[in-house]
Image (cartoon, rainbow, N blue to C red; front, side):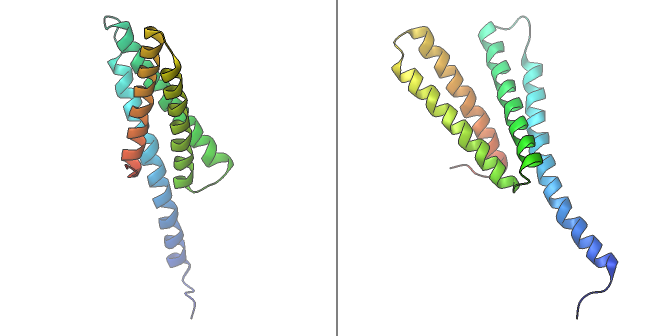
Length: 135
């Protein structure tokens, strides 16, 4: 016999929507808190390379948030599928950087690509740790 009580059905639907919103807010809030933390780490008296690394991390976090928001708004996909797509794209970026680093002969370029690889690794670690997808 079906449940005819609208209050029970409404609460069930509210609960299902709340868990998705909670996960979404947790992911976004975690990335935003790391972004804020990194912004505070940038100081005018710090070494330029240090500040540049913090800025690159902030840019990658912004890129990740933009991809995440675009994916959720346009495709209405499962949150986990969107995060998996972001991880795949970051992995591809990392592979490109590694290939460029291996092909370069100049020390300055090698250092630049090493720093870029470290930055991508850091953001990937944050995302994987948050979503429980560490290998």
